[in-house]
Length: 81
Image (cartoon, rainbow, N blue to C red; front, side, top):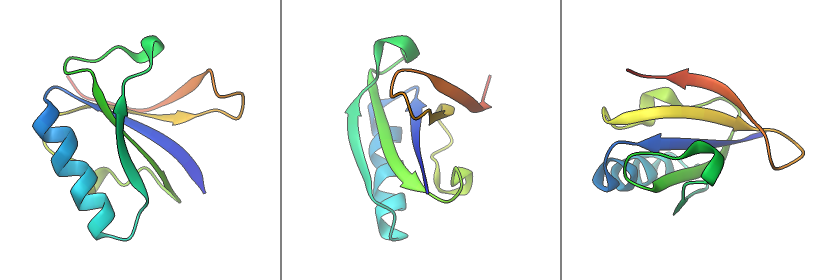
């Protein structure tokens, strides 16, 4: 199981994605975006899953990163234009 952070262009998109993830049985929470990942709306979804769960994300997804074990670095998984 890996920890991921998804950032969004809007707060509403973050809320919708968190709700979809939770509905699929995935532990997900809304959180401020870490400084290293600054995002448009300032709200991200942190979740733990076997894969990045791209299909559960709202269309206003900005990017998904995988959290590295050191807790301070991130590996890009998906970045949308």
